[in-house]
Length: 366
Image 1 (tube, rainbow, N blue to C red):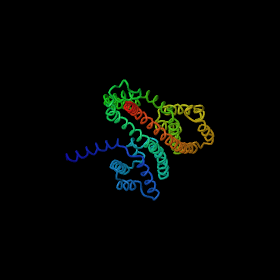
Image 2 (tube, rainbow, N blue to C red):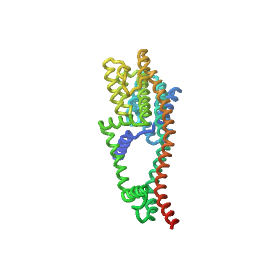
Image 3 (cartoon, rainbow, N blue to C red):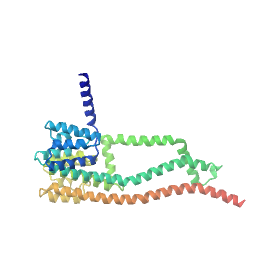
Image 4 (cartoon, rainbow, N blue to C red):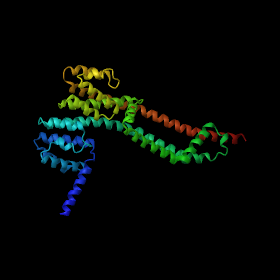
């Protein structure tokens, strides 16, 4: 009896812990596609979930599917199963599923969710892929400079007896090297504290707004960040409107889905304007957060009651723009990094070689 109670208690703890575990976005895409395929083949949803659970290799997702299967046997809806894991499945996905479950066309919405989720994920992965090369080079440069300043440069500069007679560039290099050599642990500590402070600072509501405002106005990257936000806003709003979710509820859900606090507050303001029977384009008109071309397209199609289709086209348009911007930024970063690296190497080389050349000239003249 005790063993059974103990096992039940452990099971509940495991289930509670699994609620906070996240699955990868591409796993969701595969899940949606396979579910849609099996439902199209007239496989009962409970059986489809069981098949997916049997073939799943990720233990976290496997446990999720097992719980889905158990809940579905209790005549729960798939959307209700997804609600158990808010860390993995967004409110928008749950609402869309719930809307289409009432029409018995679950296969259609699953296919659409797979496609749209894949597009959202692809933008994120493209940005990460574009940043891998610059981030790797910058990290390597920082470590190389750190090692040179703490190990190599001090040994080379030991050959000079009187620092006051050295060129200005060499004296500057010696001072920088001295800071690195004597206070390297403080430098590392300050970097760690700065990163921690940024993360804590960004969690506070007021500072999060200021930080996100800085992000959308940051030089070079501001345009691509705005396009990513607008693409996500358009795509999620289109999903919800296409699933017969009310415009008010769609805007509320979309405001939580965009990761920028500035846009979140602006979308909530838009929601309040729509409650007062104001048109979307009228609320957004002349707002610098939303491009005029987007507002004009919404204005035209809002009058034809086909807002969901045009907003989806806007999302596709901005996805293409993001691809172009990522390619351009990636191409621009490469020469910039090379120039910065060459400048650092040139400064170190000149600072070391100049006094050596002076010593050689003095030896030759004697």
